[in-house]
Image 1 (spheres, one colour):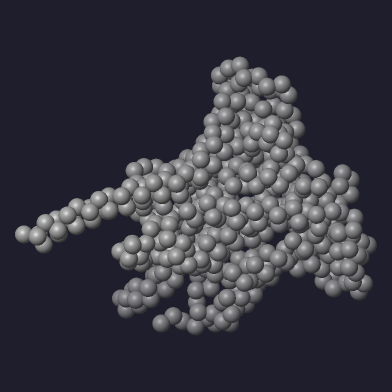
Image 2 (image 1 turned 90 degrees about the vertical axis):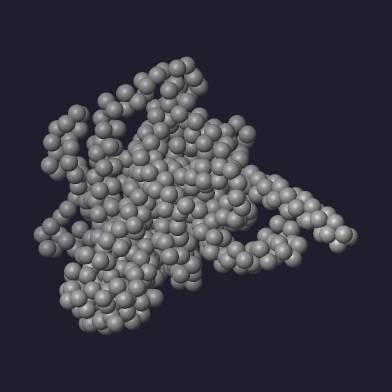
Length: 321
Length: 275
């Protein structure tokens, strides 16, 4: 009898111990996460809420005025020449930037994947611009593409003299709303600088993706008589699709919130040919004291980024669980 | 078996390398040129006949550049240490412990890492002004945490998930408490991941511009990116000095990349590339 009773009691104690461990785990995990949650809840979500609130107010001078203005600030933005130009520039910048970063990144990654010599050295070289700040990139390219002192001095000898970021031309420049719709030449200059800085990222991503594809997959296709190009198009490229999507999302959100590069390289530009919402927001809020208008621009930027990242994060979550 | 790369490959690569390196080399060449050779016909001579370090001296003598570098370093260092510590606790809890609402919390935290900081800048500025923290180190450390924390959690969760679960189970069986397990078993294994995260957070803070420009406007508290952006005077652009300053801030980053390239890449691509 005795041993049985003992074991039952022991079991009870063990169960109690386990329960307290689980409870303790809960408490600790709560304590572990609390500082991060609090910081992010107050300084990010709380302040975003505040920005949203201000964007619906009449606070467009130095004196705070929280009276309700409805969507007035948003409506006037969309009728504003400068903001319309910003939307055009951002769209053009985003498309050119993403296409070039993806194309060049994939190409360089495929080359680096050919078991070449000094691969590490090449990787370092392609990667290093990424560690620089957009400010340094902007300042350096402002000089290189400066029409009067930069590479134009070389191109002059061949007889071409692009105006780069000082050009106010928009191609084809169809009148629509208040602005000319098309590709502003000046934006191309900014895209070149941004692509120079960010291509290293897509190279790294694609290279990691290419390395994850087992050699046997290629071997099998080769045995079946597929050409190298067919293998790439039909097998490798589809396998790289998740990486392509990740790179697109990351580059898209960088283009939508870009500020530093434009600020350092060109500023808003004549006729706002290189202006972006970030620069507009900064100048409206901190140079002009139009807090409500500035807040409205910030909220539009936030929503445009959310369109890209929320579905992406949701699908990522699904894939994990 | 893959084919071995041929000569055309290398020619192609070298051309690309030249394109990537061109801005850097040009700035390097300009930084040691006398002012008269920066423009006009001599702008494209790769090697000047009259090399000079005047620009480098001037950066430190005529501008408080050393002060900028010190400010950047202090802010980036404190933010990194503090954020990585707080984030490592949170990431461990998220990666290992089960609790209600975990996915929601993770989603809310991670989406912050992609939010435009500009959406929080004016309330943060007003808040810091009201508590008297503009033009101080704390004035930058607080807002930097808002993007450094989600970035760190993002990278660290992936690292913690890779540590085998059995190790903790074994420690628990031996009667170790959660804190003991964390400090004695998990932390030593997570050191590479924490180190990677620290490098990335440090670079992000070192390069940050928007908050630094808005919050610390006094010369005494400006950081390097703001300093470089402000080199351009109203009427003249001192390209020689700007080149020298650019080289000075670029070299530490080049060294960091050379030393830790693998770690930096693994940190950046973690989460996005599934292994």
